[in-house]
Image 1: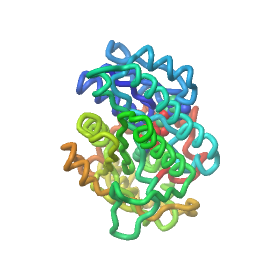
Image 2 (image 1 turned 90 degrees about the horizontal axis):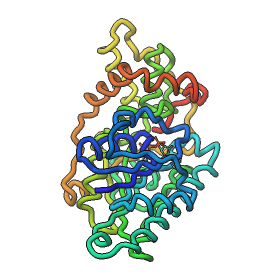
Image 3 (image 1 turned 30 degrees about the vertical axis):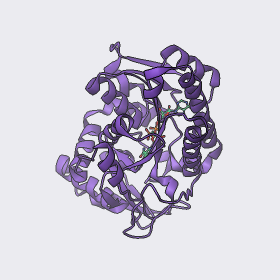
Image 4 (image 1 turned 180 degrees about the vertical axis):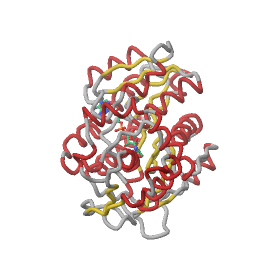
Length: 351
Ligand code: NAD
């Protein structure tokens, strides 16, 4: 199958592209603007693979997008390109509206033109999978879970722009009949995660013996899903999801931020005992404005309908993730030293 993946040089996109090409054998065109969040090293394993091609292009540029649709003639689109960091959305909301809202509209328009040019089986089996976040639903009371019926209540410029993009995707299905699927997923973790987000930021700080900054009281809760479980979930929804439907993907691993950071400290104590105990590095910093208290997903619909379920055990996979960063300094060192320093932000990232 020929699949167009946007944002394939980012954290989740690269895990997905590697899974599609190496594990399943699909032919993939990665469309990525190569913003600060992209790391081309992530797709290096595919450098000589004829089943993969990388095109640097901006999803907000209709000419480039339409040309790529016409040239590659995808059988499916998996749309992940986005501005994704909540803290950045607070200081530069315009970039989020541009990429996440306008960019999604351009991708949908391109898909519609392409899909309308198809006929027969090719038209019937074409799919556009829009990848989104559980943050569109706002904050939950204790012990509650988001479902596909939860009311939209985005509270940051990031989540508001993703909410708008979800509505556009559904509107292209309702208005034009485009075969759209939507997924909303919880917080991802795993290898190749840009070091401004909570887990990699903490891993690199712990590695360097620096303070581990935790927002507020550290009791904000999130559901954590391993990025490889997410990639498998996206493929399952693409293959077996019902058109026009939304599926929530989560890891069934709700933890508060302090538990996550303590879990990382425990992993470091096992892997680098000479530098422990690492919990002494934990420091509390002023909370993020509008910091949602709890996100948690009930992935029951996806589990029942598309035959997928998360497989990773959080604490074990967290240790694997720490080990990946210890073993892959060549991946993160250039980001840390050159293009980006997590310390400049001063705070724990997305949580
Ligand atoms: P990321 O920031 O790591 O990667 C985003 C990628 O999109 C980068 O490679 C970047 O270069 C590319 N991109 C940005 N603007 C672009 C543009 N204008 N044109 C083309 N490419 C552009 O993000 P991620 O964490 O991998 O998230 C991927 C998707 O999954 C996003 O849509 C995000 O909203 C969603 N999501 C993320 C999480 C999470 O925990 N990270 C959870 C749920 C949903």
